[in-house]
Each structure stands twice: as C-alpha cells, then as structure tokens.
Length: 500
Ligand code: B12
Ligand code: SF4
Image (cartoon, rainbow, N blue to C red):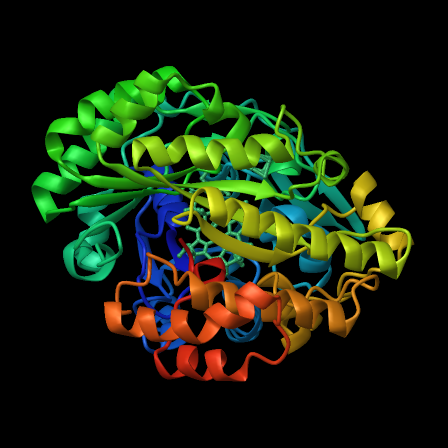
C-alpha cells in the first residue's frame, strides 16, 4: 500500500501553531494508510526532507495545505520541483486558497486534485479510489481536470464534528515535540494551544473566503468534546492557554457557556473570534461566566462604523455603527478586551467619496478608543477575495481588478502584499489613500501599543505613546518616521499579519 506525505508550508516566522489543517487530514486516514507529516514551520530545509521521503519510493500521495501569502509562496516552487523530479507523485492540495482559486492551480499542471472545503471524508475516499483504481467522480468536495475541463463534484453536507476521529496528537508529537514546538508563549500564557472547535460560519459577508466554501453553514464540536481534547493536551504537555481558531467560536451562547463552565477549574486563559451583534445578545450572566472561565480577549470583525458600508460588505445580521461603540463599552464592564478589526478602502463611485470614507473610519476608531481605550484595533485594507465566478468577483473585475493569470504570478511581491491585506492593488485606492491608512495605523499603534506584544516593556510603551500622542490629538498622521523608527528598533508586533 502506498504511503501519504502531508506538508504544512511555512506560515509564520515564529509562534508556530499545531498544524491543525493537515492533522485533521492525518486523522482521516489514521489506521488505514501510513502517513508522515512535514511541517515547514519547523524545518530549515523542508524540500530536502520531502524529497528524502519520496526517494524511498514508498510515498505516492502528497498533500499540501495552502493559505494565501507565505504558504503559497513556499508551495509553488516546491510543487514544481517535486513534479519534475517525481512525476508519478499524486499531488493533492487543500485549504482556503485552492478551494477559492482552483482554475489557476489546476491549469499549472502541477496539482492533480483539489479538496474543496472539508477533506475529512473526501481525502480518504479519494485515496481509496486511486489505490483501488476505482472512479472518483462521485466523491464529494473534489475539483480536478479532465482534458481542458475543470470538474467540481457536489458539496458534502457538513459532518457531525463529534463523530470525526480524534486528532493524532501523540503521533504528531513523534515528528515534532508538541511541548517544545507548538505550545508557545503568548499574551495569554506560557504554553498556548491552537484549537479549532467548529467549521464554517452562519453568515455571508461578501468579502469573506469562508462564505463560498461553507455557504452559511456552521457545525461545531460539543463543549464536552472540546474540553476533553484540551484537558488531554493540558495534562500531557502542560498547555495553560488556548487560541480558538474557529472562524466564529461564539455562534452558540449555550455551547460557549457550557464550555466556559467546564474549563473554569482548569484556570486557562483563552481567546476566540466572534461577531459583535451575536455576542451583544449574550446575557450579562453569560459574559460574566465566559470571563471568569479565562476568556480575556475576543476578536470581532467590526469592519466599518458606517451602516451603508456594513450593508455593502453584506455584513448580515444586525450590526450597526452605534452598536460597535456601545458593545466596546459593554465589554469593559466584564474586563474582556475587544479586538476590533476594520476594513478600510472599500470601493465608492468617486475618489473623493473613498477618501471621505477613510476619514470617517479614522474618526470612528478614535471614538471607540474614547469609550474603551483597551479596545485593540486591527486595520486591514479592503482586498476582495471572491471565488472565481462569483457575483462579487464579477463586480470587482468590472472595476478593473484582476487576479494573477498564472500560479507563478501569485508569488510576485505585489501579490504577497495583497494577500497580507496591506497593499491591495485595488484600482480605486490611490497611493496617498493607502499612505493615510498606514500612517494613521502607525500613530494609533504608537498611542495604543497592542497588549498582545509581550516583549514591549512598560517603559518602551510609554516612550512610543509620548511620541505619538501629539500627532494623534492633532490629527497629524503624515510621515510618522520617528514612531516607525522606534517600532522597527523594538520590533513591534503586528497582529494583522503575524496572527492573533
Ligand atoms: C491558524 C490560521 C493561521 C495561522 C497559521 C496556520 C498554519 N497552518 O500554520 C497564521 C496566524 C500564521 C495565519 C496567517 C495568515 N492567514 Co490564516 N488562518 C488560520 C485559521 C484561523 C485557522 C486554520 C486552521 O487551522 N483551520 C483548521 C482546519 C481543520 O480547517 P481547514 O484549514 O479549513 O482544513 C480543512 C479543509 O480546508 C481541508 N484541508 C485543508 N488543508 C488541506 C490539505 C489537504 C492535503 C487536504 C486533503 C485537505 C485540506 O480539510 C481540512 C479538514 O476538513 C484560518 C481560519 C479558519 N478558521 O480556518 C485562517 C485563514 C486560513 N487565514 C487566512 C489568511 C488570509 C491569512 C493571511 C494570509 C492573512 C491574514 N492577514 O490573516 C496570514 C498569512 C500571514 C503569514 N505570516 O502566514 C484566511 C484565508 C482566506 C483566503 N482568501 O484564502 C483564513 C480563512 C482566515 C479568514 N477568514 O480570512 N493563519
Ligand atoms: S461573520 Fe466572520 S467568518 Fe462569518 S462570514 Fe462574516 S467575516 Fe466571515
């Protein structure tokens, strides 16, 4: 029986997380096929490591998980090199990038199959079919090419998350030490675990990559199952904090409170992502329990203070500008830090309107800081991420926006910035507008350095704050070189790129 190699391309310079995407895939074939993991975050020369395995002749299937940005940048040269040297290898890509951009990947000729969304059933079924030389066209969640035609099979219903096999943590630990490699020091604790407890999201924000894949569906593990996994890792490797990587951890108040009650005695700190309008419906009692159970900080996609923009972004639900401010104030009572992300630079009919909107958001963010100065602000520039062929894709294409036409073009420096949502290449944003957003961000981060930067001492915070304060009060954001210099010297952390 042929073996499987699963590769997690490098995604971050430091603070490496358990590679949950490929670990789920490993779980799906555990006990049936032999598999190995190569984690690009933990290897100095991952390509050589992969080639060493392939040279044994035992590995036929190679699975890559690919996010846009650095993971894609490593994946493209690797896949080319591997296909040239080992042409009989079957290359299978999964994750958000391949699911959203299948054509450019399959047209490259380097990738044989894409798993479209969850791979927990599709992957083992595909391997079975290939091993037994059986047809695979009825397997759900697959994308592949026959001749010049791209074939997308039907989407599978979201599976019961409690019925999925447990993740093979012990086996991962044989490849890379969980304690030393994956449980890192963060603002939350000394040994922070990354855990993913639910898939999808019930909302349909038009800019979000989760929507075309999950189509407003959400399925979660039960609070008890989540607790059991975390307790296991805590007992075995000493985790003392948790980052929940779910797109939307707090969809269900009942589940969140149940989990909070279970985890409370463990005295762990935790963090997760949520929607403002959903959580604003939580009772005071629920918020109190959640905080008491260790939830210190929650990430919210606030996106914009302007109700019209919220509508344009199809934010859905009931979120409004007033609510965003009110909720930041409400969380103050419970000592939960809201981490709000904003998307600046959305399209408008005239450049003047685009600029006015940016100025509006800057004022709005300052109002939030007034009511709750501990609110963490993360600024993104609007980078449309629509799936090829969707209506949003048509809309932004009509405005002159174009995705790269070949897989290699995706790794140009300009596109890497696009992925990081820093410099979006959107035709309606002028360089001056982008500068204004970035300069404001520099000043804001100077006055309110992020609490998640654990290396920044009190004294350094004070010094940056002092320097940036005048600019902030007088709205003088242009050319903040002196603040940038200090941030560079002290290696200031950027949650928007480096992760939560
Ligand atoms: C953890 C995480 C990170 C980590 C690193 C992850 C890692 N692997 O090391 C960090 C913080 C570094 C990171 C960075 C970025 N990330 Co990120 N990240 C996530 C997050 C929160 C969780 C990923 C995860 O572990 N999921 C759990 C697993 C189980 O789910 P899954 O990945 O979907 O896997 C399933 C399927 O997709 C499929 N599958 C996935 N891989 C494979 C592989 C094979 C072989 C097969 C068969 C199947 C398969 O099967 C799996 C099981 O069903 C996701 C959002 C999310 N909730 O998924 C965003 C997400 C993937 N990130 C995203 C982005 C854009 C980024 C950035 C590029 C930009 C940014 N500003 O965030 C940066 C890159 C910067 C950098 N330095 O790398 C986007 C991708 C959107 C898109 N357009 O494609 C997401 C979806 C967040 C979002 N909603 O916008 N990220
Ligand atoms: S609520 Fe968040 S995860 Fe859900 S669709 Fe909107 S942006 Fe995406």
